Length: 473
Ligand code: ME8
Image (cartoon, rainbow, N blue to C red; front, side, top):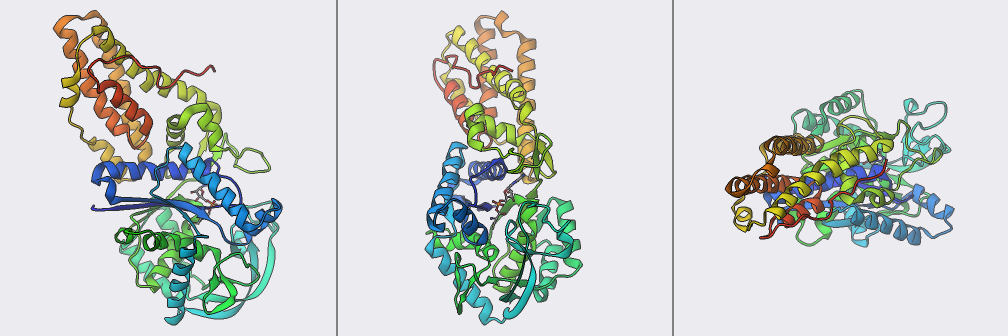
């Protein structure tokens, strides 16, 4: 692999970021950091950003008594601040209100129109502003959208421009079946295949009466449907940021299963119609609840990632989120167990191991510099395997098994009973062992990894302050 282009969804700015958004973004960050280590910094492009147009945003701005422009600037900034606090290393932060993006979207749409993929027709349907889409009958339960139970569903009838999705479906299906692009995990791929085979209708791609959006280039009474505007961000970024063109197509689109449909079918159809290369992998992770309950405003359990950073630190939160559940499945984030897990895996785990070795080195008063220089870093093969299988949760587990094993070995070897050459040898072997662990840890807990490398990369090793201070339960 010569280059790696990884994306998160661009998040709606109707509200500030929560830990659902943080979860996907941390995973994307892990992949970006991992590939920077593997194929070089300049060969990786990591994109995240915010989705700022549409009816949902107009509503939220109104509620806050702000103009859409001021409102989106403010919330988008909250995302950028949060990602800094979480150590997110995105190469660019995309905003759909960027004027250059407007040009890309209009160019793409005009091309589709000129190629005959777009037509005008009357549309009548039930619209969910929360999802920003028309719902099908089976998506409405007890007259509500199950994803947005407090949102009033509205019946809308308007003249829309339609995209000939149905005509393109056989081409998309063939591409998916022959793995020109992959949808993962496999169960999700099967769901998508089933849904496509069940028959697909054309989709409306413009709105009238939603003026916070990109005007349709040949008819400015319409604005571009917010999902089409948003999907193009992935392509737009490679056109509007200098020297990123060669990163197309995307190597890994990350998201949760809620928006897989847009990426696994509609996005592919748009690209096929435009004769563009398709993304390589679309990975949908599971949806999680908080302590067994769905996250929702009415339950008041929407968690701000910044609060968790305050409690557990950047790397602490990254660890706790990454290890909460198997990435491909739905799961539960058990906030009530965070403290316990923090103490056992971080304070008593890696934190204690590093302190222990550093203390022994300090007490020995040896000069360790040649050892550090001797250590050759190689990515661990089992970690490589887990990452190639899109299992960063497994990869971090492998590192933790190494940490536990290391701890046990020290316990058995009892280096504190040794002295002289024997002690020096054993301490050198520990340094040779902890440095590769730190290197492998870099994509996951970047600050901790750097701290460990700094502690053991000096001539006179000194026991540091605890990497993770124990919490009172
Ligand atoms: O859908 N569990 O934005 P959005 C796991 N703007 N992941 C979660 C989660 C949860 N409980 N809640 C949210 C949009 N997420 C569009 C995307 S892309 C061209 C346009 C994460 O703000 C997960 O990544 O609703 C999910 O797919 C995303 O937030 C939805 O973010």
